[in-house]
Image 1 (cartoon, rainbow, N blue to C red):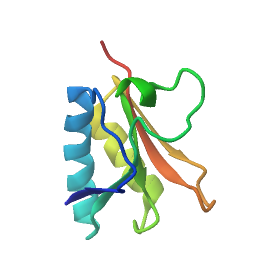
Image 2 (image 1 turned 30 degrees about the horizontal axis):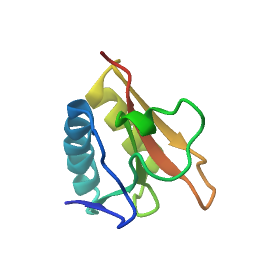
Image 3 (image 1 turned 90 degrees about the vertical axis):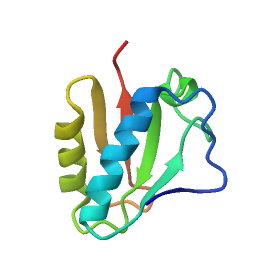
Length: 103
């Protein structure tokens, strides 16, 4: 199941991100956990971030048994038009960043 924090905004979310979330949900479900979105186009991100134009989301990784493996699976499932990064691995604010780079 896809869930999100109350503070998450989805203004102008690109359709490709919706597809990415569906694939992420299947991967998270295979590890027995819900897929939590922790950021859409809310919060502070670096200048020029695709979060601000609805082309990136961050996903919670703490409940996954193998977050780096889940990121790799998602990267493989989505293909070259997406960037999938396990950011800040091992730190309290770690997460999986999913970004659509296509047209």
